[in-house]
Image (cartoon, rainbow, N blue to C red; front, side):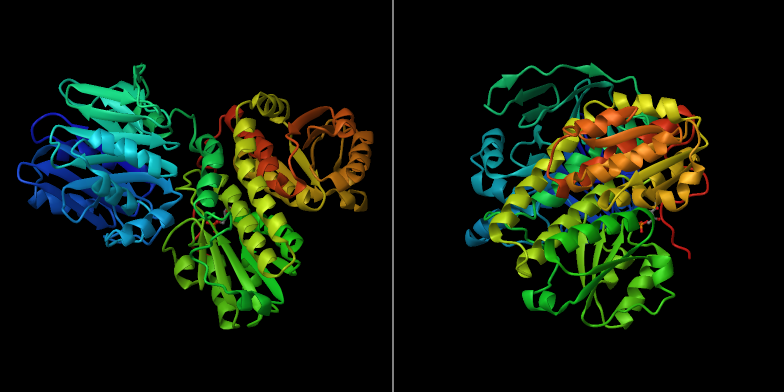
Length: 609
Ligand code: M6R
């Protein structure tokens, strides 16, 4: 995830504060860094691909003396990690510099408009449009220019701007991406994360959506959406540095669970163009390529595999192309039915998983086109694929994957919708309607996160169990698999998912009095069947926790506990129904006092076979 630091204040202190702030943000992951400072003579900007140490080494021989500056660590989304794509971005006249976190959703239109006005783009980023907009609309008043730019850009952003004509201030603006102002003695700060400035001040306020702040060394003035001045409430931060890196959440896993709605929006929104169509910018597949494919393989490991299994359901439903989902460590030693008429979709959060990479190479040798879904730009899997769909989830630090999973599902919805449209299995009206519903699903997830008491209570009830069963049918069976994986990874309880209809063929023998069974039933056509399966396990003494549509009264009545999922289209249920499973796993692990973020025996990225 990108990081921002801004400083205005004491003579020649900008570089020191910015570098120390960026260092504090390193834990978030990044692939390039940069700084811009207003020195006596000019605006000086330096940025480098790679570790922050590259920037620091450079500055150790080229100190920037100035009292106003901005810095950035970039986690690549639009465009590879390169010097050009790193922030700050500066204009041709070299008097404006900006840093940006988030995604400018309408950057393609803005870029076109700016090109028509003579601007020449140097990077592949969406962020570069911001600096040219400031350049184009600058009227000697940076605040007025910011008001104008705010009207033009759409998306998620935390932006900080400096201008060489305004040597005593910087401007900060935000929408749906965090930005915190820090207040000091004859100096003020801004950062994307409190950690970056905690060393200098504990007196902070948070910018709200749509707000713009003019920050000088002895004043901070904040304007709301209507350009009215607002009084900001100050908060004194008593967090330790460790707590601060988690933004106040007890663990990274919980923080990442809560980031899911905005990460889904990031993955989704900037790929929807003005006419409401999905534009998969990094995927070069043409309509005739797609027509050629007679089957699709999805290959991955762990949670990415579980996302792939849901992906199979989504693609088959929307595009009617046959999909096989395989575990990479098995696939690589098979002789799979892959050829030039096969599309192989490789899924990997890290982009570095050894088994998945080998599977990719095997499919490629067999002539298949490779489309990867990954979270890490320029990772090995991204580099070796023909096409890449980047999930814009930011770095996932907890070993147990959560936000990578839901953004991978988002990727599958988007790919499947386009396959369906090209394959003519979806009408344009249905296609557009599904996009609308998909966008609304992120809000549903956000609402669900507002109250997690039910999951906490259930975690408390089941935490001492020795085994827990998860049941589901069809796509719910796949979600149940992911829920069980989450629980076993971090709580060390034996948890397994079963296709509910298979119970009577064996697994039901394991049910004893009090065995917790988590039964997931979100698909209208399967509710009656699930009710029968629940009755089977209840009759053997199981303690049944149901998760299902809030309107399914009969289902609700038969379960001892019930978590309600808002009534959305069945197709999009997997994107929200996994949440209770993630939360239950998290709370069980926490209640048992385990190291939630670093469970025993597991590594975040498995780069060995
Ligand atoms: O980086 P990848 O998505 O390729 O990783 C695959 C698995 O190792 C990963 O999903 C693992 O199962 C996680 N610990 C799940 O929470």
